[in-house]
Amino acid sequence: MTKLTAEELDFDNLDFSYKDLPYRYQAEYHNGAWEPGKLITDSNITLSEAAVVLHYGQEVFEGLKAYRRKDGGINLFRPDRNAKRMRESAERLLMAGYPVPDFIEAAKAVVKANQDFVPPYESGGSLYLRPMLIATTPMVGVKPGKDFIFRIYATPVGAYYPGGMKPTAFVTSEFDRAAHGGTGQAKVGGNYAASLLPGEEAHRAGFSDVVYLDPRQHQYIEELGSANFFGITKDGQFKTPKSPSILPSITKFSLIDLAKEMGMNPVETPISIDELDEFAEAGAMGTAAVISPVGSITHQAKKHVFYSETEVGPKTKALYDRLIGIQYGDQTGPTGWVVDVPLD
Image 1 (cartoon, rainbow, N blue to C red):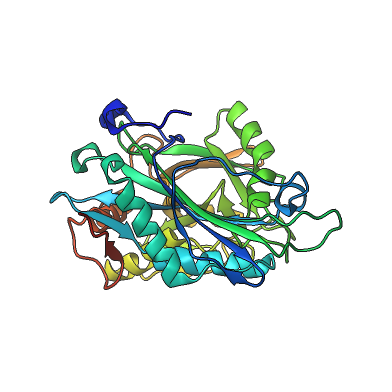
Image 2 (cartoon, rainbow, N blue to C red):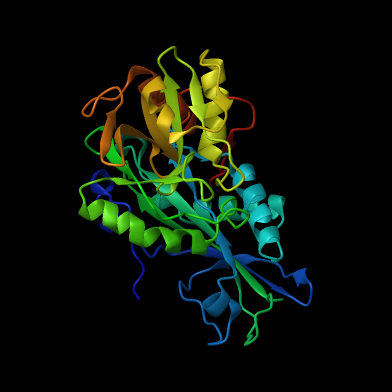
């Protein structure tokens, strides 16, 4: 496959799709130790047909972004949190976690090597990084692998809201995203595979995505599609669900800190689907969109509208502006949130 060149890209009209860039980082784990990693140009991975990842789903992944600053430099946003979460996910699946310092350096190396593909500041785009860890040991019985590949590839993506932030409609699902006591708190592919059918059914019905309720009682809000949920009460408090089967979102914890800074008295607490009336605004939060405003949630054929179905609520917009201001280097954030990528 011919590698993409930066000259071929229209940075002002990027979508959210894979593009085969010149470089990615890879390291391998064999005989109980990680071998030195390096930048490579081959975007393909060769595996045994019996590799554990192909049959028993022993794999974890991450998602983070690099942002072009106004001065031409490049920021990574909280890569240490992604590195730590990947290690926690790996532990859940009996995989060898990649060291946090090496993860951060690998992310920097991939961004630096592909720096020409980081969208310009004015475009509102970013370079999306996908770290992944897969088990490659050939295995027929159901046993954990002992050999692993760690890789980070990158792809330039456009602004998630090219036409501006617009609220969308969600609907509750009878399906579960993850089982109680399962892998909901880990970023594993199986959780996303389980979400494909309910997500597609929601789209066919005219909704943006689904609201997953807790797997035991189907009473408490867990996540929205592949993002965490938040609501802002009528008296201005930021609330987000607390559950052992929710993925611990880096964006969520960042917004909790910023909500505290902005006087919203944030709290993680169980949120019943019957409590929607207490929220003036609501949204989904994650790496891709930062914040996706929720205009309405339909539950058991009853539609609940938040601030507006067409306009973003003021507190949601303020949180969004504050966070992307930090990510792009326009505003100073908490210490350690932004990591500069040294360039030549």
